[in-house]
Image 1 (spheres, one colour):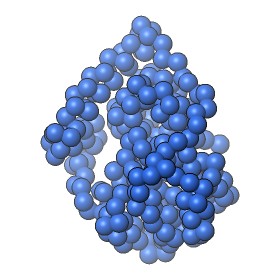
Image 2 (tube, helix red, strand yellow):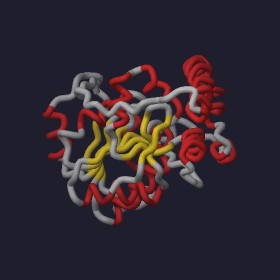
Image 3 (cartoon, helix red, strand yellow):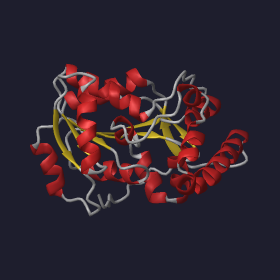
Image 4 (cartoon, one colour):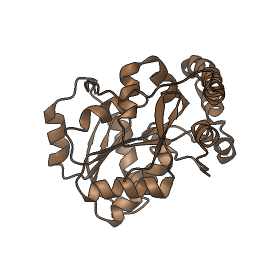
Length: 261
């Protein structure tokens, strides 16, 4: 069974940790069962508040992990989750790859560029040389088809990592769920980080929930509007939800999976 979910600003976030999330994902891979997961940061929750189709896609996930410390803090504050750590997408990818290697479950890498995937593959095998990468596919920026899913199945993979970034990756995972008999995991910036194309924030900044500040310092023009708008809105929204000034209803109506991948 998937971990319990709780309402954070209208999006369902899972009360989970690395061990529980990894076990759920590997169980689905072992059983050849569709299973969708993503690691949610504040940016994803902000996008979900303004885009109902995206919010529905997030709420359809089997596992929506607290990727950012602020999401973990929200679960603890609003729902007394007592989580001691977040479930950071790149670190979860490492744990799942190690578990997949032990159980001989081949993986598939979807997203980013061919150059990134070429650097990523050896980095993943360095964790455990038994890891089998059954196939890779860079993002093609077009509507997915049944043939795309069949190519993944034909590769012999048993689970898929998607590294397209928010919100594209969750849309892709949502669209692929009816087509793939295996878990699909959206892991955000993990591809670029493990490929060595982007530095990881210092551990103390990660623990303090300041990873956004580190990234803002690296890419102020691209990320300035995102953080300066989403972060204050997130804090105000949490306060409104906690005090009962506003009710955030969870929308779980099915939405047609449409995605250009």
